[in-house]
Length: 448
Image (cartoon, rainbow, N blue to C red; front, side):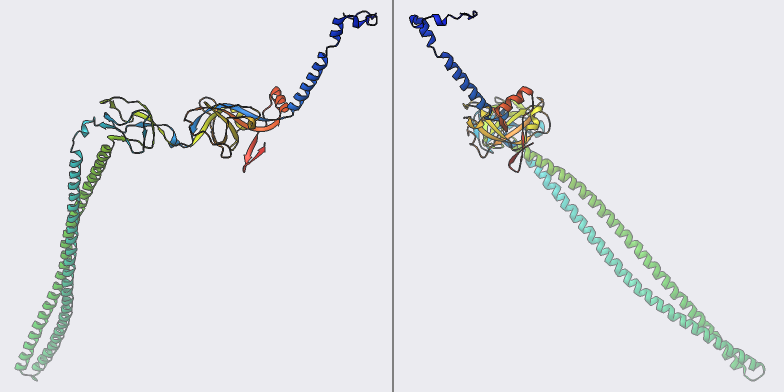
C-alpha cells in the first residue's frame, strides 16, 4: 500500500489471522543490510588510512653491467676462405679455443715461404747496417789518426819556428855587432887617414886600416844577409804551418764527407730495415689470424657464415658469442615526466618473465615472487624511443636473483617512491598532482 490516505487501517486488522502477513513482518533483511553497509563503510574508512607505497611502473629487460659480459660478435680481421669448422651452435668454448680455420685469398700472401724470405731480407739489411757502422768507425779512426799527425806536424814546425825565431834574434845581434865593428873601423880609418895626411902615420898603417874597414864592411853585409835569411826561414815555417793546416783540414773534410755519406746510407738502410721488420711482423701476425679463436669463455649462440669454402670479408661477422659469466642488471626506460622522481639508490621491485609472482602494487612487502633492485645509473640524455634509460643492479639486502636468468629476459618493474595514505594517493590521482618522492643521501631517504 502507498499509505497516501491519512486514515490508518492497521488498528482494524488482526495480524495473527493472516499467516502471510505474519511471515512478511517477521523478515530482518533490512536490519542486516544496514549492518553490512555500516561495516563496509567502516572498513573502507580504515582502508583509506592504510599506507600506500607510491611507485612508477615500467617494463624492461635483463642486461649486464660490464660491457665485456654482453653478447658479442666475432669478426674476421682479414679476408679469407673458410676451411674448417671446429664448433657448432650451442657449444661451450673456453678462451683461446679454436672456432674455425680460414685460408688466404689475396695473391700477395700466396707464397708459402713468405716469412722465410722476409726473414732473410731482414738479416741482410741488418748486416748492411753493421757494415755501415764499421765503415763509420773506420772513418772516425782515420780522422783521429789525421788529427794526431797534424798535431805532431804542428809540434815539429812549432819547434823549428821557435829555433828560427831564436836564430833571427841571434843573427840580428850579430848584424848589430858587425855594424858597430864597421862603424869603429870606419872611424879608425878616418883618423889614420887624417894622421897620414899630416905625416904622422905611414901609408902601411893607412892601408891596414882600409883593409880592416873593408873586412868589417863584408862582415856587416854577411851578417845582414844571414839575418835576412833567418827571417825568411821564419816566414817559410809559418807558411808551412798554414799549408799543413790546409792539407790536413782538406783530408779531414773528405773523411767527414765520406762519414756523413755513410751515416746517410746507414739511416736509409735502417729505415728500410724498420719497414721490413714492420712488414715481417704484419706477415707473422696475419699467419696467426688464420685460426679464429674464442676471445673469452662462453656459448656459441648463432653463426652468420656457413659451409666450407665460403669467402668472408675483412671485419665480416662470423658468429655471436654469449659470455659464460655475467653481472646481471635490469635496463628499463622511464617517461621524461617521471625522470625527476628517479635517484641513485632508490629501490625497485622486479618481476622476471617466467617467474610466477603475486604483486600488490602499493604493498611491495606483501608481494611474492618479486626481487629487489637498486638504481645505480641514470642516462643524462634521452634515448631514441623518447624515454630515459635507467639501470638497476641487484639489491644486496634482498633475495638473490635467479641464477638461471638469461640476457634479454623481460621484466616488469615497480620503482618505489614515498609511503602515503591511500586516501591521499586517490586524492592526488584525481587532482593530477605529482607523487611525493625522495632522494637518497648517505644511505638514507630524504623527502624533497
